[in-house]
Picture 1 (cartoon, rainbow, N blue to C red):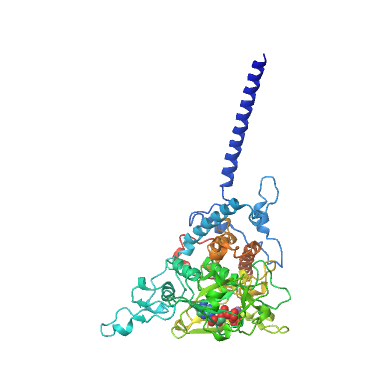
Picture 2 (cartoon, helix red, strand yellow):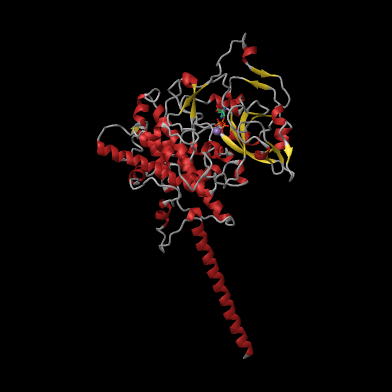
Length: 539
Ligand SMILES: Nc1ncnc2c1ncn2[C@@H]1O[C@H](COP(=O)(O)OP(=O)(O)OP(=O)(O)O)[C@@H](O)[C@H]1O
Ligand SMILES: [Mn+2]
């Protein structure tokens, strides 16, 4: 009897155990399939572009004041089944390693899809000879050869140089210089980008001297292959917001802003910022020990907690109180590849027509005259070619990253007025995420003019499948400093989406205004005729 009871209870126990295991397996399977479902899978390039771009409605977007919640996040996520508002992508617990990796992967797929989209791959005619900034002389007579080849005797730390006209013999920085054309700094699919970034991030530093000009401390670093980069050290923690009582012209420059600006400029399809990489630099080995700059050498010291510091000489923030310090020797910074020397490629500096008044009490003309743009439109070089729409492109970049410091811009003199604008010096961008700065968009508001290709790319970046914050997160995750901490804190990424809506809202406003007035002035500068069959959305 006892034996039978024991056998029955054992059978019951065994079946219970089986059922439990089965339920666990089922649960694991279900959660696995949910977990692997990215929130928005990217579309194959070009798919539904017409439908998607044509049906996104921006007309209800108003220009918002500071610190408002991005309504699109709420609308998008309120479709959740139980009606609860979830702010998915903005809540990323650090401990959730697996979830983080999965979402970075989905962001990277979006970036890949974006860069494969026809709007980033518009067919363009071959570059005529005169539209290259620099050229290697193609054929050298035997009698001239000895003086025409680049040959150098090796100096301290520098390599022997034997470059010829074949690009395979050139170091990445030289290939970058030779790839600069009238309309862009580098091509969209650039095989040189990877090696160039690699060099900035890891190549041996053989010299570091202070860069003259400008207001804040920065160094020019040299590599053994004669490449050079501009180094801006970290001065502020990534999630610190600029003090609200500080005028923008007294704001610190941020190394992560220089890095993020390069990525954003590329994502916008401009390619007008020289490539920038983040790097951990050894203050002693890579600066103090290799510098030939006596003024700089005098400013090194060890802080009370044993960190290696220096402060250099400049007109702002170059004192012991504002020293930059390693931890104890590792210092974060940005390295931007240097443009060709001015003796090879002179640049012209242009004062921005919408330059801010650098006085604390005086307003600039554009702030008081609503018709200011009609004067600018008649004034050379803004009256012809693409200068005005190129300026607007820069304004959009600056509004997205909240850069108020664009008092001047530069172009390559060789190309005259018919060329792109260099977007140099972005160190004061990404200072505040909780506040937008509507005044940066004034030129777009006053001129109501934009390149059609820019507008289409902006609309693309507002779609869930290519969302700006997602592709920026993906792009920045490739920077070497990402392993220390994300280059932009999440609120900065959220701000990008919010500001993008404001830009699109401003264009919608222009369209409505134009319909009302019927003044026939075109909002769009037409530069997408080659794409007519692929992507011409209804406005
Ligand atoms: N990648 C680069 N290659 C060559 N020259 C550069 C590069 N970036 C900037 N410059 C030049 O160096 C000058 C100073 O750089 P930058 O403007 O970034 O420094 P800054 O200290 O912020 O200057 P400012 O205080 O005037 O804004 C610029 O005016 C520009 O002409
Ligand atoms: Mn600056």
